[in-house]
Image (cartoon, rainbow, N blue to C red; front, side, top):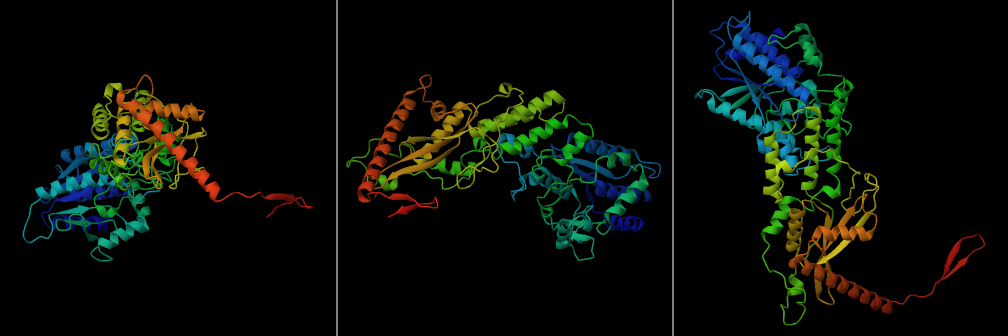
Length: 565
């Protein structure tokens, strides 16, 4: 490590450009910080004037024990740097920074507020890493770049020191090599700030064993952190989820072997990190594991998913115009002759749902409040709750006040999962309740249909998933839209109960009837009867055109049956 420290010294003294260090307080970054610290201690005070910015991130969803650890470490670095040590003969030019995601980029705002889906191993897009780690770090980097001195003779304004190593993984090695100035070089360009930042990888070629041996030799690190505390966050099958400082580091955040966000959907349902903490005696973490498992199950449950992505719905409703369809009985020749051709037909060729419903988000929010109440862990602040409920109002039009939320542990009856072809995924569905399909005919165009359903969600605070379609009778030149609702509940045991449940949600009950709802319900009955009559007529016509002949079935001596045609 002496050679690395000497090289660090040379790089530090090379110019007056500030140094930025990305530190997660995992083994690699904490060793790099230790080596930098010792290098600065070895310099006389008049030479260590260039600032060294130590940056770490707080995603807001790290395991509580890890959040406490990071905050303690950063506080000690700040304290020891300002005070100085016996070896330093004065303070060190180290400045600490803790970056957090913006409120509207936080995990719970995105998932519980807007209904964004938790990224899992099945999806390519992992928005959480970008919003929780990369963006906050880039914002801080931009601030430091702006504050850094600018000279004509230099091709960069600051250097970013990172504790990346080729040995970490084949993917990391490929990423490092892609932007390196040469195969054997420790220098690389920064993908997001290519003109202003140059990256330095002092530990690029050392092994994991060398990292551990160097740290264990320290015992107590020069900034007051004991190695026992560092080691306590490691096991044979758990690795830390490192700091992210640029886009080229990708959206991967550790996968199944990691130490990081307790909400991470990239790990197994039985999260090894949380199980490890539970095994070490942190019984409260059982609640975190159960919440995470519930969210992962609900994210795929058709009953808790929006009918279509929000952007698609907003685009559809944007073009909605009042009175763009003819009335129910507008089938006469005096009406628009292009009615049939121009009708706004609804369709859903496949199952491609949107985010989580407000109902699901409320369940998960109240469950988090319950865990917080039971364990004393701070998971959601009052500000978080206010932002979440404001989002429900502003984004979904559902008015729920913070004081309306009640800490509750939910009862979940198992997920109902559909395939893209709109059939039930029998392999993954865990719900054992019967599934009913309730067809509702509506004299509404596609956009009007979705607007009406949105209005019902806002009025009830609940959602029922439906597949929109058009009932098209070309020979009669008649067409209207239909919504096929999917109903599944342990409390609903017949198709009649399912139909009553849907009608009540639509506002079609004696206690809820308004003039508009009553008219719509009557139209549904008329259209349903009309459609059934037309279909029966078509069946009779088909039977007359293709009469069914009597087919004789004979049993053979061997017990087999055969058709005699």
